[in-house]
Image (cartoon, rainbow, N blue to C red):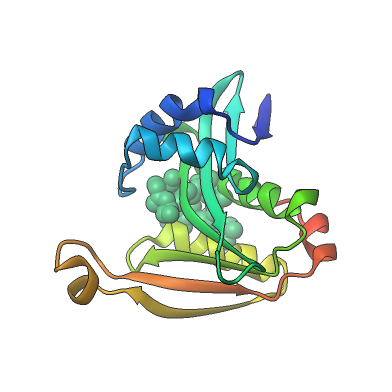
Length: 170
Ligand SMILES: CC(C)(COP(=O)(O)OP(=O)(O)OC[C@H]1O[C@@H](n2cnc3c(N)ncnc32)[C@H](O)[C@@H]1OP(=O)(O)O)[C@@H](O)C(=O)NCCC(=O)NCCS
């Protein structure tokens, strides 16, 4: 992908991130305020991808408060024109390879059963690093979403070794 830049988001990216998420169903949109908090308080564990200054991808993530070796990936969005070129994988790698993120030994995310692209993304990430991937239902359709949303399945990837994180580009 030509002229691609990956960097930490800032507050100035909040509105563009909000638009990008809205353009990437089935992702849930959050409030603009939520996206601003992601772009500021959680900038170290998030990334924005731009081509020629235009946002084409975004990942929000955070360190799990009571498990400080674990990165939780909240949302991954790649605009339609940018898909199928490994961008999501490169954004994930960019976050975990940051020197400030040396604490990452485990990666967690949730995916609905029908999201083939998302499963391929996380399975490929684990496979390229020789890490295990285990799954279990985290938020259940009936028990937690009152039937209004498909169950979210927790994918847990690890252990992640620093050497592997630096060596693998996507
Ligand atoms: C999921 C998403 C982020 C993937 O972005 P992307 O940049 O196209 O992904 P990549 O090019 O890095 O591909 C990752 C893997 O998914 C595979 N893939 C991509 N699109 C696919 C599809 N529609 N169906 C099945 N597999 C797919 C790729 O082949 C690749 O697998 P590989 O590593 O084994 O070759 C993007 O499709 C998207 O934004 N979708 C809408 C929002 C969403 O569902 N986000 C994820 C939930 S958090």
